[in-house]
Length: 150
Length: 150
Image 1 (cartoon, each protein chain N blue to C red):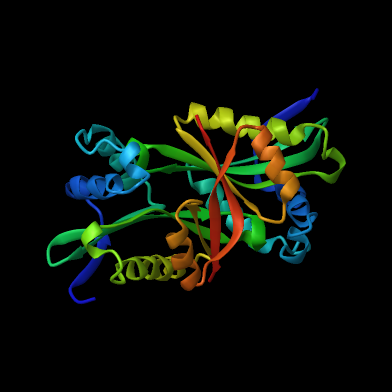
Image 2 (cartoon, rainbow over the protein chains, first blue to last red):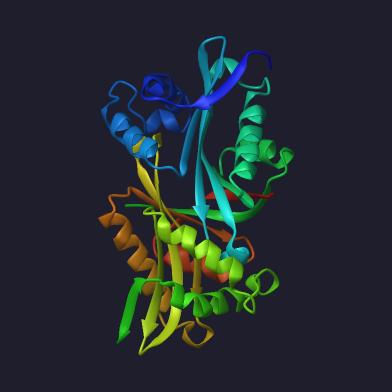
């Protein structure tokens, strides 16, 4: 894992991030990599929110991964703060070489620095490889994840 | 559902909210209703974050329900904003009378007002009654929810 840098994303990273979001069995049907306009608007919202941590992983100048970490203060569990990991993507050329592990470990370490007590994420029920991956990293699939499109 | 008000929670609501968090098969083991100190600290963090919407439901002056809604801007799904519902609790005296439906409908309506495209939540795998409840409201259990305690 030489030369790997995980850093805060900037607007200049959007083409590479959106390409990774689209290069995915689920993402292919719901992203629009040829029109970055909605992503630029969304990036401005993310960037302005101090509780959002959108990062990219770079290796020798190439953008090879991304994830978004959200800090959610809460009352339950004696006032626990939790972080939520969303939008984890690894460049196709880098899958299976440990980059996902590095990215999630970064998110766990960052969550500790942010005084979180719990890290959580949801993974589509069809992504069975991802489920084994998260379990190997110590996550417990204790919950069902429900979504309602508006 | 007469006389029901859903409003932003204040610090004065903490004893009633924490009592509801603790009056629950899972919450009983992990809350400390006799010591509100950690909850007061957490409330201050929630209250200072404009993307957090912590509410209580009141009926004839009694606090009968609570939930927390978090707004999460994102890049995936063409820059969708999602909201996350956490810490839904209904007072024991009010269970089964439709208050849960009113609270979740409030959260869905508020999510629309906040321009969210998606509402999501996770529910402990053991809460099978809750799963049927969310499915009746239109949620789809499409995901697994993973947690890692730090």
